[in-house]
Image 1 (cartoon, rainbow, N blue to C red):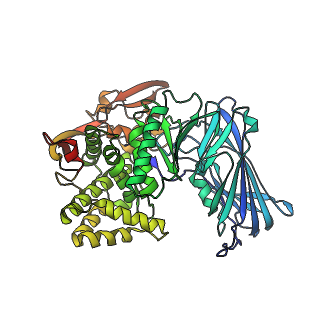
Image 2 (image 1 turned 45 degrees about the vertical axis):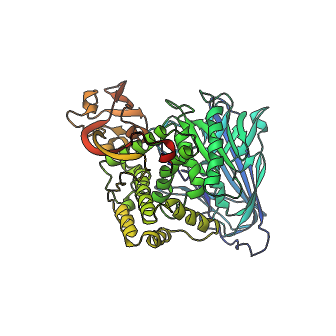
Amino acid sequence: MRAAWRAGAIAVVLACGGVAPTAAGAEAPLATVVIRPGKVVDAKAPVEVTMTLPGVDAPAGRPFVAAGLFTPGLSRPAELLGLGVSDDAGPVPLTEAPVANGPRRWIPGRAIRGQAVLKYTLLAENIPALSGGPPTALRVDGDGVSGVGGALMITPELKGDYRIALTWDVSAMGPGVEGVSSWGDGDVTLPAGPLAQLGRGVYMAGPLERETHGAFSAVWVRGQPPFDPRPPMRWTAKLHSFMSSYFKDATEPPYRVFMRFNPMNAGGGAALTHSFLVTYGKDVTGESFKAILGHEMTHTWTASEAVGKWYSEGNAVFYQAMIPWKAGLFTTDQYLQDINETAYRYFTNALRDTPEDQVVPRFWEDTRIRVLPYDRGAMYFAVLNGKVRRASGGERSIDDLIQVMMQKARSRETLSEQVWVDLVRKELGEDGVAVHRSMMAGGLMLPESDDFGPCFRRTTTTMRQFDLGFDNASIVSNPKVIKGLKPGSEAEKAGLRNGDVVTYGVALDAVQGDIDRKLEMKVTREGKTFDIAYRPRGAEVETYQWERVPDASDPICKS
């Protein structure tokens, strides 16, 4: 499992008031957004965004624009090159409000009336990464620029829905250039909805290449991936079509994959509106995209952040290899490998009993906490799936409950944890509710031997536990100074010492899940910088794995 994120990391917020919600049956007002990326020079390019908003009525003296320019994991905030606001009466004077922490804020010197125009310019550049974080920042790859809407677009806090005319002006980038977004190629009009939807898309401009199959498409900057992206994208297109059928769509929904470089935690990405930003880099091939894309496309149907991260990420891990396996796109051994990687990461996790209500507040504190919604959530769904199958004599599965949740989402019903618990109670009674409460409290989620299918069985073994060999807080702070080095640890054996300053390293999520993978860091000590690499493993602990039942055929496995 590579880490993926469901939200952007930068927000430029327009805090206005006075625009009434669109009346029922009335056509939503039209907002326009023009994106003007500049030519890439020395791996930098200015990106100007102009947003025109009708019918604004905002008072003086209250913050009007707030820009949170920092992406977790990067060494510094993005650079804002210019910011201006005007209305029907002309330019609006802005004063930046002093703030110790959080977004930068600007207060208008007079009321803003009528058509408001917000214009700003951000610098697209590759800010050094110091640790893992969402790969959402505005960056440059080759002659192209890309970023998630949260890193580029404003998200105005205006009441009501708007149609949004999204326009590209790529003339400054040179010939053969185009702009694309999660909503389509070139200029598009988004359907009526809140302006905040602009933050939930991917934006890319440059000399682009594509792989398109029906409702599925993939796009990347020409000449950038170090491998041929077309074969894995053809595989992904087949999986998307199968998933659409598996989740009972009337028609296959559109889906787009955006590819770009990531120096940290390559292979992960960010899930956005009908799209996914997937990253390449060291040790990433087109083949390694398959697991993360299976995971992320599942979100198109099953995600609901309102229910909880354990729900959205847990069911995505549960399905990420199972559906490709059922589609004939993964072998049984590949599916088994995915089960065992998740099981290893979960059952050897020293922090696996962390309650779910602590996960989000501590998400960036420790990789062992960060993976819990994925791993514990997946084991929870496997446990429930086994219980549903046994209770129904094999007639029903967890799919039936997920399908109800999807139908409620399509009907725009409000989803919550309680809605899910009520479904579980109806299906399994209080026994199912007890399993849920145990999971939320950090209880062990241990599937029965055959819960992954009749051709698999559970085994017990010992495996080495993920252990950095020093205090984890050392590398989530800035600067990253090694403290609490454990005598005899792999870190000490590799030459790491208390007081060493880590200037660069790989993100830990992928390292935690691969028992053979090394942690690679650049370390500075007494003015000298050098490389240190070691396998961050500690004591042998008892854990669970699954194996194939001898002589079990694939048709039996998939029954």
